Image (tube, rainbow over all chains, first blue to last red; front, side, top):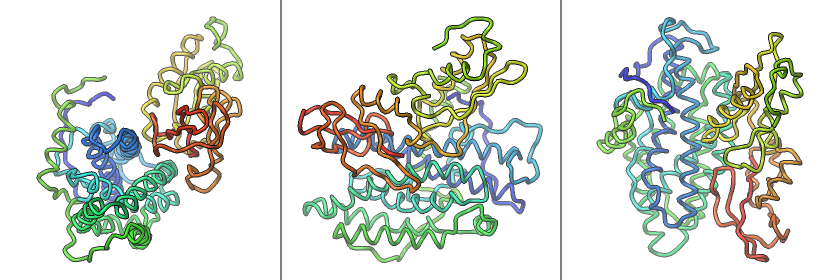
Length: 281
Length: 168
């Protein structure tokens, strides 16, 4: 895909009109998929077996595809061209394309939940991060197929089918390693303990989300939390892993407050596009 | 593939559709995008311009841009002024792969997909017959193959590796 010319902007804070809320919401979802995909790709060629490298690369590709659709839609929303109406932010300008949001925003403009940016550790850590995410993404996209926003519903109808395969895959590993050897069980328990504090943020909601939930555009985080907990509780039980307590939950990702490691991730992801502005390949 | 001739500008929609459907999938060169059920609509406007509407398979399928270019090139070679568009909805499903597509996949050593049906249920656990020897004694090696749409298998009877086109 062609890289766009630099036009560095940060995501606007949620404003009072509907276009701003929708844009914020769409970018949050696009960032969640893009950042997790980027972490998976960092691990490429380091999986325990060749088949797993192929699997994770394909999962990452699905996630990038979902974020591309969301970023493309974000560009239309920002330009005021969304079917939901809303005043045009700047009708004279061309909509930003998908690359704008991936390559030309600073790290602090990304609004993904902290879970998906957590640096890769061992494979237990990577696949636990994936599972905790997929257990959210599956009911999320399922709910979004009923969104009153036609574009989001269409993206969801594709993503829900892909995500079913992702969840099946990551859950299978959680059970296999949790209920595996003494060492694999130990590593899985460490992974679950260290990532648990980032799970609450997946269901956080603010004014942006609440308004869109009322309009039927966004999925209700409360419903998703129940579905997520069912999936996770049953998998951890099957994996003979202990479910951690909910103390010390972290958040801030959706407001651009990220870890130091995140800046390196984004810096690397954007390096080619920024070194060769306007190049296409 | 219909070879280019200048009078094909006024070609009927059936002939134009045949050109579009005859374009090979870049990642599965033994099947066409028609076999895969990716062609949603082909419209010939009164002024002779063509609009071909396709549906992408997977959200992240890297072949999507290539397919757009290949379809545009095929129509251009036939002397047609064409635009290629993609629609997300309704979402592509492997149930749209034609019977001819199933035969071609099998001939290429790829087990065709099971019926996906209306539920978003993954059907990867159903028995899979080896596309070479038809044995049901097959074993899944992973959830994702050389592309997201396939899963690697091995046949315990003839010992050959093969891939399953997963129901989606």
